[in-house]
Image (cartoon, rainbow, N blue to C red; front, top):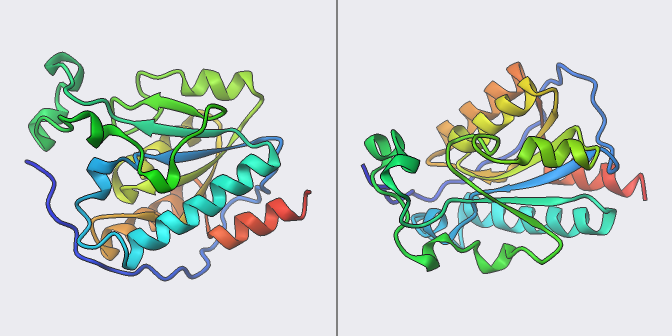
Amino acid sequence: MSLKTIPTYTYRYTPYEKRATWELNPHQAALLVHDMQNYFISIFEDENKGQIQQAIHNTSALINAARDSGIPVYYTAQPPRQHPDDRALLTDIWGEGLQEDADAEIIPALAPTQQDTVLTKWRYSAFAKSTFEEDLKLSGRNQLIITGVYAHIGCMTTALDAFMRDIQVFFTADALADFSQKEHELACDYVAQRCGIVTSTQDILTALSRQD
């Protein structure tokens, strides 16, 4: 199965009940920009409208704030032309995946700098077959701000995986995008009830500004 065009939708954030009392701390936090590659963004019906536009705009603001606050910024990026042994069961569900080098690049609006870390992405979770957990521990980070695509697949799975590794999750709802509003809301509902705090870009920016 190859990816299909994603119709334009708009997710409107409303506050979620917080089951945990975690407070974002720039000395504990890391920011994850999840799979914002040309391949995954190009299938949105219009990149300049709706939720994907909002997600790109908000993620950019969070990246800038993170860099200003000394928060490490991580990206995930799937490699092109994956060997069948590496891709494994993903091929059965999603097909062969990225084929061109240009498809694998992070979109220009969110391009990483030399100070950022780009993790090779092999499975839904950013932690699978990567050094992500070790990197966070070495830098003394036990909080993770999650942005990117797709909310109900890799973003949600990474959130759950982080929680199970004792990493506090801040799932930034309006800096995410998905196949549909329904699936976007499903992801936020799940994370809010099971493994993290669902928050907004403005709430994150406000929390960081208070600690400058």
